[in-house]
Image (cartoon, rainbow, N blue to C red; front, side, top):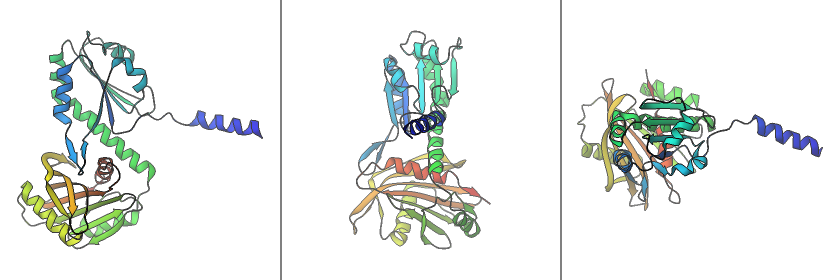
Length: 310
């Protein structure tokens, strides 16, 4: 019996896929000796999300080339190097075929599902030029897709709720099991789940709306006053930007919500855009007083990324 048990454990270990190490939100960058590259990446993509505790947008690890053995096999890696940089040896190990400057990509090198991007050029200036072409955003999209894959690997889809939302509102998304309706009306639907508390609402109107961040925040406050028992945006800890979601130009608003009456608060993210002649406000919110909240916002982003319209 003992030999049989050992054999079963061995077979189980051998048949399991080697998934990447680390966490999906981590981005490991090897760019040692290139200070302007590091400065550009931080300035371009890193920001602070107040939940209300400050949390960095992205978990970026600027690693030393001597740490490659430690980090190889992580989900997402970037190697940015010239022929004279210390990271050049990593480039030759992962991309031995490279001779000319350029941008190179490989998947599944060290573990199933890992993704390595290399940027190679003769000088730091040439590397900056390549970065400005948008490769960093391709890498960030990959990280968001990782979240989506993880979410729908561990949950099932509530097909009946998905169908109900489509029939009533003309759009839908992959509603996870465990999400229940909170409030609904002819132009508003809200769903949520616990452990931790996570909420999604979608407001849709065919009224002409002014695309102005302050007015959008006023709109959110008016909706959450009605449907969320008085939640308000803490505008001192809230930011906004122009971006894109679901192939539409959008205003993204993100930061801290609070409810003074209940003495609670958390993180939120809203997207306001026009699609098919109607205006949409999609809102994601988290209440988790004990832990970082941004990873749960990313989790909700993965869900709304599945939205489709009739």
